[in-house]
Image (cartoon, rainbow, N blue to C red):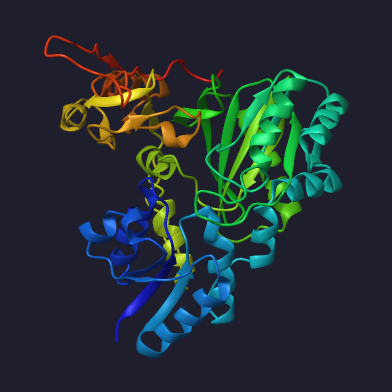
Length: 433
């Protein structure tokens, strides 16, 4: 009989592996329920036990977890994937295990519900409308005033999020979203789109744990196609008054949503000196942010969350006041991956605490303006934010992934034909001021 911590699916970009490692460090065996184990290479690499499950069906998840309790000691049920946190919480609650309120999680997963609750509770957030057709979206955009942001109400990682500057762009993007009936996990999507007034200002996130602000993070964005986050700075380069305002707005948003348990990742923009809530993600941050918070502050938010889910008392690490930066490898062009760098080239550089490349030779690149565009990352630490950021900007340049124009399947090539290779570029930008 083993001591298990059950995970319903997993994050695909690194955090899922860390969740499993932290569970083992706590003396618990991670056990993953998933529809497609091939989605998570770390299951094989770490020999993590797993079982096939129709995870889109909450009853199937509960039935499998009940069966596991007959064979093992199950200490908790959770997920590192936003798409399954409500299912995991409902399962944990049905089994009498620690959990956040699954109803609050499910409501928070719908960004249109977030907007309504923010309005009711006086939380600063953009004006919004919902629409069920392209024409209705165009009318809503006219009411809000262009530009607007058009997005699906329940996806993650900036997927489907676009700034639209014209009625034609609104109609076109709304039609594309409404034509998509399932998300990347195969879960059904509501037949609505969310339109919001565009917020013009630097973006930040506030990382909260059990009602306490743990970090204010500065974001670097590429808005050429969507809202791709190309880097993060911990702590954000703002003064104490702005930091306090961002934190207060984040906590007000969580109160409005009834979220007071565990981790939350709140995204905000600073508009004319005022903190405005973009959205709440009722989970631990992705994008390597927990690793950067650990590097900068000594706080291991993943370990604390695992302990909380397992019914243990979270232990905060010895706090320090360094700075950390994350930069992602992002392609400058569409095409086919022709060369893949060895991340060891970055790992040996000053201040680098983590570096990885996910690109594969022959991989086809079609930039979408979402987290799926990322081909690697570096995390650095420094005694100041400037030092950490300079180290990250330098390190990410050593991880340039060669991308060649993709050759059409019906194209002919000769022995003397050469295809020029282009390199990815480091994310642009310095600090959020």
